[in-house]
Amino acid sequence: MPNASLPITGAGPIDSTSSSQAAVPTSAPSAPLVTPTINPDLGKVAIPVAPDYQQRWLDQQVERVALNPHQTYASPGYQIVYWFDPIFGSYIPIGESRGPFEVQVTFRVKGEAVTSLGIPFNKADPTHNYGLAVPDAIVQRMKSVNKDGWVEVFIRKTSDITPK
Image: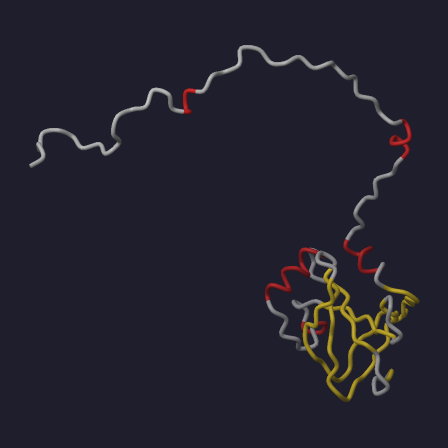
C-alpha cells in the first residue's frame, strides 16, 4: 500500500544530462564585415501609388461619355443593376430595376462589347435608390468608398432600354 504522506510526482528521477542544459558558446564566429552597396538605378524607380477608388472605377471603363444634363432612360423589363467594388475589384449585382432611371454617363466595361449606362445611386436618397434592397454590408462598403454614400452603379444597355 502506498504511503499517503509522500507526494506522488510521476516524474521519476531527474536526469542531470538533459538537453535543457546545453552548452552555450562563449564567442560567436567572426565574419568579414560587408559594406552594403546601393544600385544607383534603383533611385530612379518610381513606385506606383495605389489609385483612389474613383480612379479604380474609371480604369475599368472605355469610351466614357458624360451626359450633361443627365438623361432619363426607361426599361420595360427588369435589368440587373451592378456596382463595381473598387476595394475588391469585383462587379456586384445589387438588384434588379425597371422603369425610368437617370443616366449620367455611358461607357463600356473593358473587355465587353455592350454599352453600359452609369446611374447615380445613394441608398439613403429615395429618388436615387430605385427601390433596390441593397444589403447593409454592401451599403457600408459603398460608404467606405464615398463617405456621403453616392456611388455610380450601372446597367448593361439592351435593345429595350430607350431614352425618354
